[in-house]
Image (cartoon, rainbow, N blue to C red):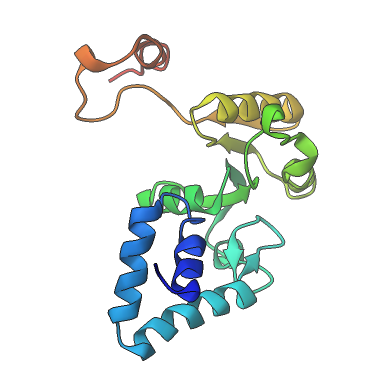
Length: 196
């Protein structure tokens, strides 16, 4: 019913996370209605990001340079490293303006079922940074799901005795109701309680 070029664009868009067939059709028809220069600007932006953006050789964050701006920033506390799974997690933590140390992006989480083993992540690079850079604390900020918890436990074992290892607190969200919290979340909130 549609031209092969349109069908190909729909197929390519459905490969994006969270984009189903209906959304891909909507985006395709939007691009067809948009002025040519606007649609080509999107194509150029995708091409540029694929050609210019790479991983920071220090932390694994996304950058256009050899070393990212966070690693180059002199005012950062170089005795602390916050470990995250993906660059998007780093951005979330950075938005809080609460952490002033450095970061380390693993590139994923351990998941033997999916074939993700320690050798597939930037774990050895993290251990090397800790050993040679005078790091005093590593904050494990992996996701609070099964693979994130397994990754945090593995990292804590690897780093034990070399550096202080801490984990992000977990528990009740601000604005939440106790009535709707599950037992695991409530248990973690109780275990991680602090004095006021």
